[in-house]
Length: 299
Image (cartoon, rainbow, N blue to C red; front, top):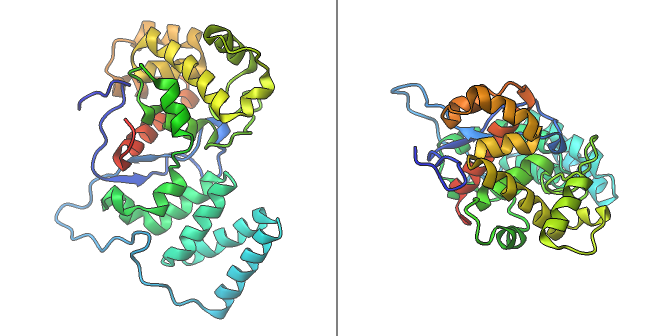
């Protein structure tokens, strides 16, 4: 496969929401559900029609289902969106062929940054579409699960760099799922989950004055500093998998790993990363980038 300037691979034509982690893991842990290349179907088997958003006939709903959906809507409008999401999650699991219901749950869950439940519903209701369909048919499903927020700030921060916009989108999706106020237990803040000291170092590097850690919840500032940090690591390592290892586990750990497995091709290197968390993280960010590229737009 050809290698993009960022080190990400060109995606295949078919993509599917993959069960690469348990539903409900938080994006700030670096373990948001991801998308992978779909496995081939049974040789010679005729696949059933794929249900894609907006293409399925409206479902016939029982009075009980309609009543629960009305209740969920009332809860959401009343500021009890978390309870509404739980109702819709249960309904979507009980009625996976109701495409509109599935989309309603996915949209609410992603608005609440509950990516695990949203991915589970997408996998259950739209798995065939995602695995065999044209990404152009994914429509609102792609918009909900793979948002493209803050592209202007990302492009500005990447100006003159060979790092792919898709890679940064994939990294933000994994780190915070675009939650500007995300905070990790380790103290990392914002879209690209920057530690305050790392952010301060990058602010000094690019001459951003004055700088305060409170600025890290500003998307433009967080992206500018986070992309600068990524670019410094990318300039040192070149390879996207190595750079992501450093971003997640630190330069010291990566230095040890490079002595043992640094000469391997990207796929094999990723599979042999000693830390499971970092191995999973790198896989997912690279896969996210592939999916963003498959959906088109950017570079």
